[in-house]
Amino acid sequence: MSYPEDLAYPAPRYLAEKGEVNAVHRPAGTPPDLTGSTTTHYLATHDSTGGEFGLYKVDMEARAGGARTHFHRAMSESFYVLSGQLDFYDGDSWVKAGEGDFLYVPVGGLHAFRNTADDPLSMLMLFSPGAPREEYFERVVEMTRRGGEELTRFRVRHDSYFVEE
Image 1 (cartoon, rainbow, N blue to C red):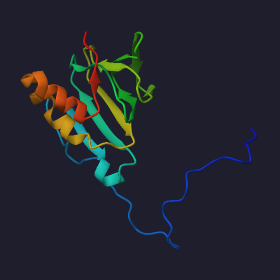
Image 2: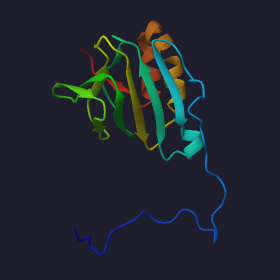
Image 3: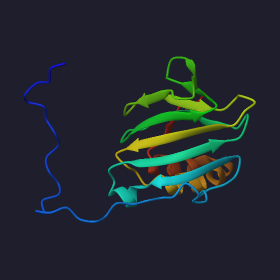
Image 4: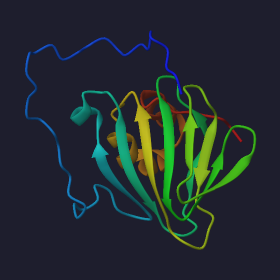
């Protein structure tokens, strides 16, 4: 395979002469950051990556809900299924994604997901650029219960534009 000579990398952002010690290690046994029918591990947050990306491990119980059809104006969202089966809506139809499957939703792409299987699901979710999604994950259930204009403002604040079904 040949590669073009003019491959474009992003402009350098680190300009010091020598590298620095700043890697982050999150051991596998680190307790989840959120628990419930959906458990979430904050692997790499907006704060820890300087806004480059956000990476979350999400474990959903059997027949757990998910997110209704929505899109994001400022970030893409990717899903990588570690185990179980994810029902994923790509804006046109529902797809069954299993272990090892990857799904990418560009900015503006309609999508939804849920676990309708009798088994638990584990997946990675990646947001790029990294938005401060932690408050969204922590308060979405509460805000959904409240509903109305307060829920609408919360969703817009967190770049989540839901399609009325």
